[in-house]
Image (tube, rainbow, N blue to C red; front, side):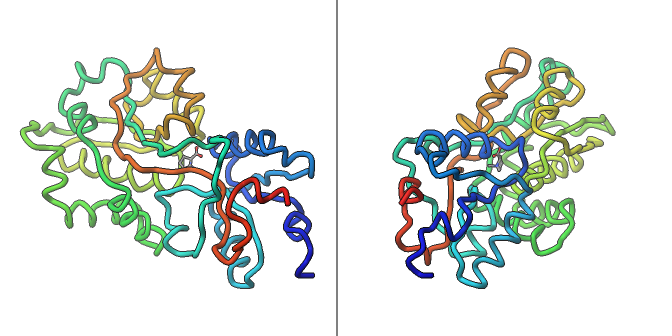
Length: 270
Ligand code: PBE
């Protein structure tokens, strides 16, 4: 049925990820704003792993699929996919990922604070770690390998910072591939500086709350201005924002490149 409408072919379903992700809330907004709900388009909740596996199968069969997509992520390296244009600007333009620490960290752990404040890398650097983890390397090992391969970069973050001796520090994160990479790299850098870091994965809301309540010291997972924007708004008075650790991130809906007639979210309606 080559002339069948896209929606019918894929059951008017956008394949999504975990319910708490900002991209899920933005996609729901997009469904409303582009009036996709008129055709009963729906967003399917799953996980990144389930979404990419569904994507993998669709691409193997050259079937159409619409996913929640973002960069940096290995899905754009591994699969021929493209972002759909977003003329109503629901997903926003470029995003950055910020580092957020608990109040009082600067006074309590000035060395860690300095490193967290300086931590800054590129989408390409983050992707190197993400791809390794996707290839099956343990995240802490992938982080150590990256640190070993990038001594000048790490030196920018640690230059002149005094070593400490076993001070405990806790980082929280959401187990998205990008945050698994960044959190492990920061934790390993802190470990090499003499800290005893623990990292704990949780849902997005508890992660923000953990830093606000000082149950955790820091997180490096704040996708802004839009994707984590609601959490930022809720917690901004109770945390310290150290600014971007990565620039040039992007969030949106994506489809395989062989879907040549579908280039904008508007095209989903046709
Ligand atoms: N993401 C990846 C997250 C942030 C990191 C884009 C899936 C989200 O909240 O949507």
